Image 1 (tube, rainbow, N blue to C red):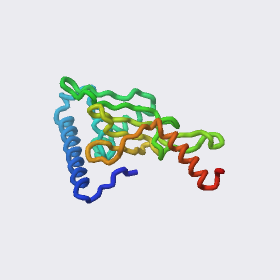
Image 2 (cartoon, rainbow, N blue to C red):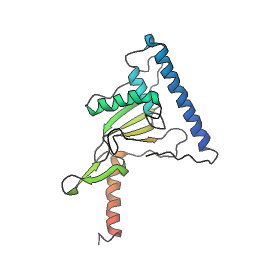
Image 3 (cartoon, rainbow, N blue to C red):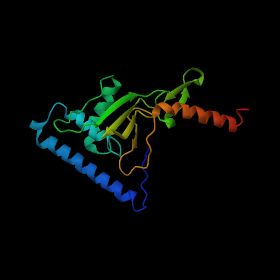
Image 4 (cartoon, rainbow, N blue to C red):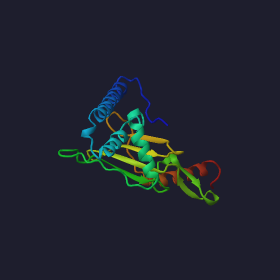
Amino acid sequence: MNLFRLKNDGVRLPVMRRVARRWALALTLFAGISLLAPGLAHADDWDCQVLLCLSNPGGPEQYGACVPPIERLWSALRHGDPFPTCDFGTGGSPGTFATSTFASGGYCREGLLYWGGPEQSELLCGATGAINVDIDNQLYARVWWDAGGAGSTITEFYGAGSTLVPYDPSQSAALFLQRSEQSNSFGGGGQ
């Protein structure tokens, strides 16, 4: 599911092109440095590469250089391994981090909630988890992983140029239930 719909309104299209060019350049530089200077690599390179790829507005696997580290991340998370951390080093980026939260009926994107379980009476989430990426202590992107199946992701981008408004996934169940009740009332299922 693509959350971005580029409009040729003279503003969003150039902004998104600029963002895409910057990401392509950043990933190319990262890949080039990793290949040309393996002696400079550190044990935490994978962790930082994961953070860089997760913060991509086009999704964590938009660029080929991000596919291996992100696939490794999904595998690690599915096996219960801890979420990687990136040490930005001296003068790094305080307030830039990512957190992983397992999805459930109580923490989910509204569009991924559904009734399941015995007698279709349990509110479930159609994703395994969400990774929230913060830059300068502001939500920059949220990636729902295994959304609708293993390997599928939905990226919500909140950075520069985005028109999306951040929301609290812990409130989605209440909204889902409210809309379900309204739908039943209007559809003849209520009184």
